Length: 353
Image 1: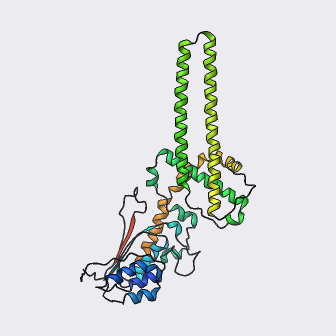
Image 2 (image 1 turned 180 degrees about the vertical axis):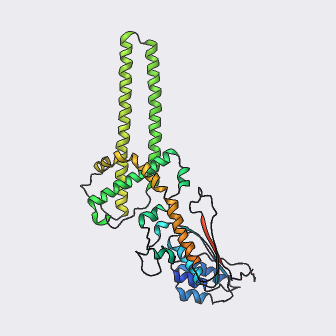
Image 3 (image 1 turned 135 degrees about the horizontal axis):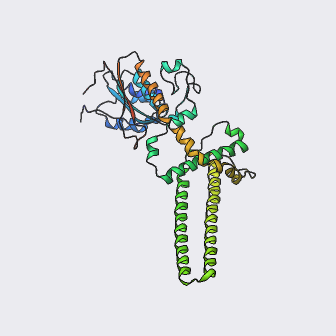
């Protein structure tokens, strides 16, 4: 069956060369099997194999689309659009700015930031911390429940304390800025279970306390009854204090589990002299400041993301070819924090129906 309908190739792009090889070719018509093979095996073949699968066709008309293309992939897509005449338009929605390469990390034109000559001339680099910060989303934070927000701050406190573990016991690892990934899900479940158990204990304690007071108000007489009630209330208060202490001990236990998991992910063996409890006790008094500090810091996230996106927009505007370029928010940021799309087309492009 011969059809002029647009063809779609979904593949995993491993390099700029493989993407350019794809854009310089067009899947032959009337060969569905070859088309499927190319889409399935694209990541496994080199440029010459791709070209042998798909003979060049100058009349091709391609649109590159990247939906939340991670790190440097968004940059690769924009460069391929600029350099390949077969690509007539591009829709790019970036993601994972923390994985962008920078000029100081990569020589030549293969760095993910900066892209534009304008930003390159001012020799401005973001650094890992700012790239991480560009991923923050105030809209996502707004929708968090109080417990979820507090748990996130607790995880940040754990990470800070874990850095102290690395700094004291593994200084050679600390200087490499290691990443331990996300370890929040298991801890979040433990935290939620702990909160639930604490609430249940509190309800049981309140119920028991009210029953005892009611009982003594009915059968107690004179000073003896009053004294007994005071003693019981004092015991209840002691139990409450003990319960809070148990929660503190539980946090120490959670931090130790967090640290052991982090060391495992880094391929490190825990040393026998690591005092996890002592390190957490050193950090714990400052844990309540994490929320305030992180909130102020995260407020800069959208500013840094905008700077990265404007660099990409400027890169396209600097090109010799006439381009129509717009930058538009197209998603609800609460559902998709990376909601800004860079959309461009070549003005002299004749898009085939």
